[in-house]
Image 1 (cartoon, rainbow, N blue to C red):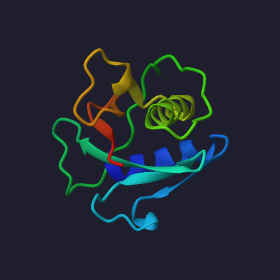
Image 2 (cartoon, rainbow, N blue to C red):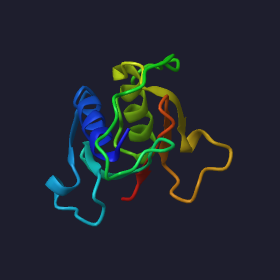
Image 3 (cartoon, rainbow, N blue to C red):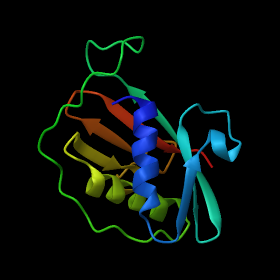
Image 4 (cartoon, rainbow, N blue to C red):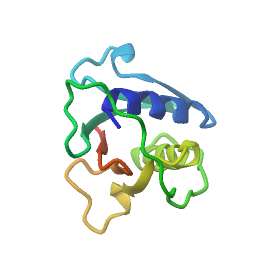
Length: 139
């Protein structure tokens, strides 16, 4: 999964969340990060950067390979985000898992970890093709 395609998947998933408006970071005027989305929920806007690591042996210069499908991780209830980063983070991942056709192998939500990474909120999404995408809360 490449960041550009993941960004669209994330936008599509966010569009189904109640009370949420989402758009690409560039469309929100944020050009510091090439991929990501701006999420407006409960009157607050949060910015989520998307970065990725390609599947083993893939090169960014090559066309994106066909998706690899496998067993889907357990989905969770999709909560309505309250606007704070933790609730948006949980809602985005839940919506992704619900919409996934089977490309996602695992999802790890940062705020659920005993020791979250420095970004605090976000997620690591592992795909069956061996690629990884990171969603990082940047503001």
